[in-house]
Amino acid sequence: MNQPTIDHSEVRDHLTDYVLDDIDEGMARAIRAHLDSCPECRAIHDQLADGLASLGTLVLPAEMPAGHRDRFLARLEATPTEPAPVPIGARRSGGWLRYGAAAAIAVLLAASALAFYLSRSDGEGGRMLDPRAVEILASAPAAIPLVADAATEAYGTLFVAPDATEALLVVDDLPASEPDTVYQVWLVRDGERTSGGTFTVNGGHDAAMIVSAPQPIAAFQALGITIEPAPDGSPGPTGPRVVSCSLEELPT
Amino acid sequence: MTEPSDRDLSDRVRDTRDQTAMTMLYDRYSQAVYSLAVAMLHNPAAAEDITQDVFLTFWQNPARYDPDRGPFGPWVLRVTRNRVIDLTRRRRHERPAVEGEVDLTLRLVDPEPGPDDLAWSRSVAREVAGVLKSLPAAQRQAIELAYFQGMTQSEMARHLDIPLGTVKTRVRTALQRLATLMAETDA
Image (tube, rainbow over all chains, first blue to last red; front, side, top):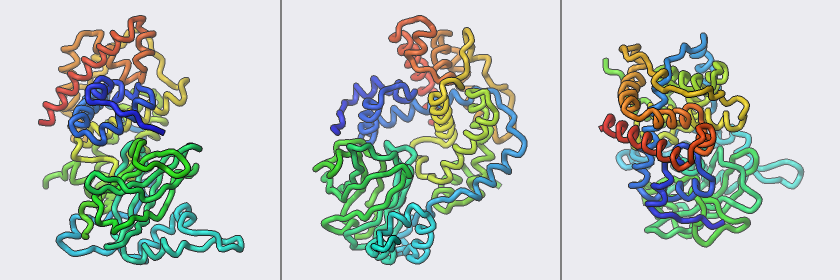
């Protein structure tokens, strides 16, 4: 799947259509990819989007239904969240903040889908935890939140320990993979992209995988995930970046 | 005591999963979100669902809001409109009917000061209303149909029986004026 590239003027010609969500998906993907790498066009986009959003203030204030706040608070209590991220900045001043391995495992395994991904068949109809995943979590890793890009609903966490060449990637609310595509993880250093592996997402929209790198993960500056052709991905990213995170503040 | 800023609250939600901060953001913006949703859907139950979903989605994944890219208010209204448009485009029969000419100025909020939780909304609305009043009626109508009715520009061209290029010019001009206004307001 080749991602068409477009230049600044073409992006700006289509930005109005884009913020109105009145554009075909192929062009939308190309614009998203451009905005990911172009702060100038992204600033124009944000300005147009905020201008459009300002119209939302013009509606007459409506009286909310009785009990709405209690219903919201009940749902808030019942809604699970990802664990709070380890504050990356705090690692510099306070040393390497450790994410308690036992707590991490307990929280993570509470999600049945994740437990499934972290497990494998025991050959007797049951499942056993993947020892590599458990080892990564037990190494007291940092938890770095992922930032949604083209997959605007997606969220997740990268668990990575100092000096490790493997990290555990957990991501939710990604669109299910098309039959001819996979998600491919990229580790970025000085503009060079190194593949960290591929994975697919089923109808449950969540996935976990172990990212492997030829050198410590902390030696890279960023991680990104793109959509690439199945089954093996691409030598370099060609599809839209769906989620990402910075690795800049990991201690090396 | 000074009220915490939206940025403080969203940071607390993201960094510490602070339910009190989340509730304060809900108290601040839920009526603006609900009012927009109900104005677009004309369905109070669906509008409440959308309102709760918008805030709970943020609660589940607060990193999707980046305070460096703009204030919380416009962002949450943008998310709300996108949700409503997704819903109405999935269920075309629920799209509000377009009946004749629509005059956006009829929607303008009461310019009198209101409760604190609507202060942001009212302040922006006054500015936006000023810009809209300066636009030709055709541009106001175009932006109204695009924003509140969720019409595509092609649908607008058919509805108004005018060329698509004309619709695009009207929408783009109106949107650029609003964007400039918002940039000046934030400055």
